[in-house]
Length: 58
Image 1 (tube, rainbow, N blue to C red):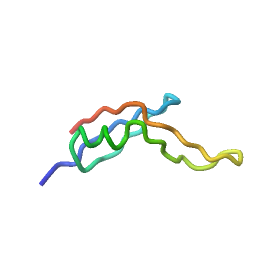
Image 2: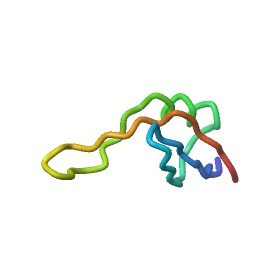
Image 3: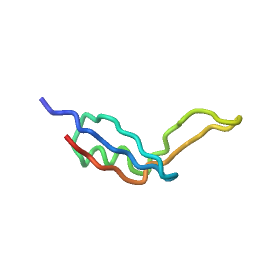
């Protein structure tokens, strides 16, 4: 059984987050990097942050 990778996600505004991913490091990079993620609404505007890079860990 494949282990879930830890992923540190870096966004275009300097923020980071941590999550788990079922797949390889290459698959995680393909999925996250360049993808805009919805962070909800603020002051009547929808907030999107785009992943610019990731770091994976066990």
